[in-house]
Every structure is written in C-alpha cells, then in structure tokens.
Length: 295
Image 1 (cartoon, rainbow, N blue to C red):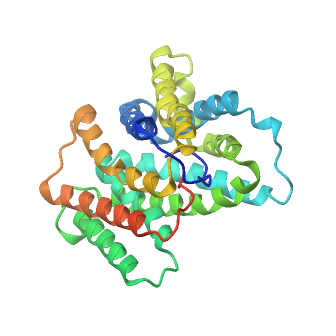
Image 2: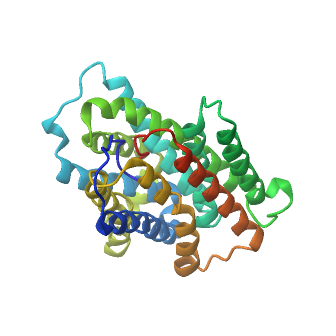
C-alpha cells in the first residue's frame, strides 16, 4: 500500500474504484515478486535502495512536491515518516529473502491491524486481535507448526509490520499539511537513508541494462503505478470499503508467490494467513466511523 492517509467522504461508488484498488494491490505484489528475483544479484539492501530511489524519482515527476514546501513545525513528522518508510522497506525485503511472500505480507499486516485497535476497549476488537495472534502463531516456526520457516525471516516481517504501524501514525501527522505530496517527500528521504545500506551492492550494476530495467520495473509496480491507482480510488471509495478490500492483500501475495515464485504453502500456513485476513476484515467492518486509509 502506497498512498498517504487521506480522509474520504461518503460518495457513490461504481465498479471502477474497486477494480482500481485491486489493480493497485496486485501491482504491489507483482513488484515484490520482481524484487525477490533481483535478490541474488543486488541483495535485499541493494534492491531496496534502487526501488526507493526510482520510486522517489517517479513520484517527484508526478506530484512535483517542490510546489508545496513543508513548514518547520512539520519537519520532525516528515523526517519520522521518511525514516519509517526506509526501515519498513529494508526489513520487509530482508524478510522476503527468507520466507514466502504470502506469509511475509500476512505477518507485516499485523502492524496496521494493531494500530487500528490501539486503545479500543470493545470486546469485539479484542476478539480480532486474538484472531490475528492466532494467525501469527500458525505462521510462526517457534510454535512448532511451520518448522520450515526461517525464524529470522518471521522476526523481520513482524518488525516491518511494527514499522508499518508507526508509518501510518507519522503519515497522518505529516500528511495533514502536505497531503498526497507527503509520499513524494517521504520516499525521497527514505531513498537517501537507504544509500549506505544498498549503494555498495547496487553500484557495480548501474551500467547493466538488464538489472536496471528490473529495478525500474520494481519501482514502477511497487511505487508509482499503485500510488497513481490509489489516488484515483481514494476520492471515489468510502474508507470502510477500502479497509475491507485491502484485507485481501495477504491472499493476493500468497497467490502471487505461488504463480511467479513457485512458493507453496501448507494448509496450516494458509489457515494462518486466513486468520490474519479475517482479523483485519473484522476490524474494518466493526469500525465505528470511517478512518483514514493506511499507506
């Protein structure tokens, strides 16, 4: 998910916003599959750096963020937003190198889910949190159920989820002033911060057209295209509908991993992904009022 939280009024919705959002989610997962294909050459750090740098250039060309400069008061929130973008992507790709895409996305999804229920005193929300925890346990090698998973990969995916939760909070703060241009600023900050981690791995391939073309595909499918599609969707879709549809993302990631990466999951792992999807879906349905969509 790529866009900055934007409040959405209740509007009439046809089929096109739904198709646009599904296209956005599919684009993100296809981008992740292409990124995993670059890991043997660039490693997750080099792939992350190029994805952020190319994504930042594409977003800058579309959004022209220099037309709205951040105020001094907003700079700390913008910096925190950019830092979490960088950390979230580095951790996610490091996890993706070790565990299947569907499981990685499902574990990462717990971050925004817990943010959505943070501070709630409703019993129903505790039920959804419990269901999410059960899903994580089914996906966890520490519980003895999914012994084939890399423990470090699971920890990295959960850490990426924690960063995703913080990212939502910081994006709401920074986005209150800058709107959609927050994403362009945040991506640029993240790209600069990722340089020390990935430049050494990526630098030998700057003149390799095949590697750079692959990196451009990752930047397009992971950043520019889904962002553009979501920008079209956000003005036409109620927040609750958006939240419910986004819950399908772990399932889409599992399907993408199976089709593009030949990643097969056992029944218990599929049940764990389904539990996380159910928890996120229940949280979205039970929301008392429309909330800003997570990035």
